Image (cartoon, rainbow, N blue to C red; front, side, top):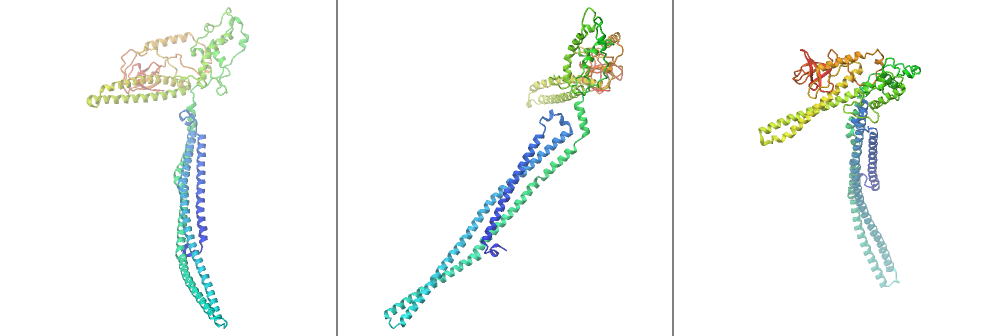
Length: 604
C-alpha cells in the first residue's frame, strides 16, 4: 500500500503529516542538544567537585597519603573524575553523531519536501488551468448554440411572415447559417478541450500525483528510519561508556575494600613514633628548705648534693605531662648539655663571704640551659627548626627512619656507580682490543670521575651507618631493651683503628673516677630527663651486644685490628662510634677492630 493509490485525494493531509515529521525531527535534535549540555555541565561539576577535594599538597609531602583511608579516598576521587570524563564523551558523541548529523539531515529533508510539494502544486495548477479552459470553451459553445437557435427561429419567422421582404428573409437565413457554423466550431473546440482535459486529469490522478505522493512517502519513511536510528544513537552513546563506567564503579568498590583500619593504626605509629622514653615520676620538692636557709650556708638545697638535677627539676616543674596543650620537653642536665656548672655549684656550697643568693645561681643555670631548650623545641617541629645532616633535630625513631632511607639511597647510588665503573672497564678493554672502535684514553676521565663518586659514596655510607647505629642504640635504650652502654674507644688517628689498650686504660680511669665520686642512691631513674643524649661513658659489657657478618675480606695489618674473611660470622663487641671502626670477636678467638663498612650488623 502506498500513498499514491490510497491517499490520492489527501494532498493537504500529506502536507501536514510530512511537516509534523520534520518538526518532530527538529524537536529531537533540540532535545539531544540540551541533553548534551546537561551531560557537559554534569561532567564539569563533577570535575570541579573532584578538584575541590583532591589533596592540595604534593603526594610526597603529604603524610596523610600513607593512610589507606586517604589512598582509597583519592582513588575514589580519581574514579569519579574518570566517570566525569565518560560523561563528557557521551556529551561529545551526542553532539556530533546526533545533533550535527540529524540537523543536517533535517535540512536536506526540508529541501526535498519543498521540491516535491512544489511539483505537486504545479501539476494542480496545470490541471486547474486546463479545467478553466474547458469551462471557457464550454460556455462559448453554449452561447453559440443559443445564438444559432435564436437565429434559426428568426429566419423561420421571417420566412413565414408575408410582410417580410425576400431580402430580409435571405439575410435572416444567412445569419442563422453563420450562427450554426459558429456553434459547430465551438462544439468542436469544446470537444477537443474536454478531451485534452480528461487526458490531463487522468495523468494527474493516475500518474503524476501518485508519483509525487510516493516520493513523499519514501522521504517520510527515510526520515522516520533516520529518526529511529537517532533514538538508537542516544542509547548507543551510553552503551559505549558503560564498560568504562563499570570499571570506574568497580574501582570505587575496590577503593572501599582497600581501607585497612589496622594498617592505618600502624602507619600512624610509624609516622609519629618519637622513640622517647616515658617520663618518670615527679620528685617531691621541699620549698620549706628555701625558707629555712640562712645566707651563711645558702645552697641549692639538694639532699644528694647534685645541683644539676635540682636545677633541671626546677626548670621542668609542671612541664612533664606529655599530653598537655603547651607541653615543653624537659631540659637535660648541664653535664649532658656539654655546659659547665657555675663555680659556686662545682665547688660546693658558697662561703659566707661570697654573699651570693641561691636564686642568682639558679638564674645562671637557667641561662646555661636555655640555649638547649631551643633544640628541644625544634624536635617538636616548631618554627626556626635547624635541619641537620644527621637528622638529630628529629625524634630518635624518626631520625632512625630518615637515616635508613638516606643509607638505602646512598647504597643504590653506590651500586649504580660501581655498575657504571664495570661497564666503563669492559668498554675500555674492548677499545684496547679493537682500537678502531674508540680511544681507550677517552674513557679515563669518566672512569676517574666514577671512582671519585664511589669513594665519596662509600664515605657517606660509612657516615650514615655510624649515625644509624647511634640512632638505633638510642631507640633501643629508650625502649628499655638495649644493654648497658659501653665506653667508646679513644679517638683513633685518621688512618689507624682504635687502640684496645688505651680503651681499657680509659675504662679503668673512668672506673676510678666513678668510684671516687660515688653518689648515694637517688631517684635518678625516675628523674632522668626525657630528651637525653648518650654521650657519657659507661662500663664496657663483657658479652657481645650483637652479631655481624663480614661482607668483604679484611687483612688486619695495623695495631689493634683483626683479620677476617668474607662471609665469616663475628660477635659484635662494640659499635662504631663515628670513626669508621667496629670491635668484633672471632669464634676461633681473637678480638680487634675492623672497618664498619665491611660488616652487616645485627644488634641483639
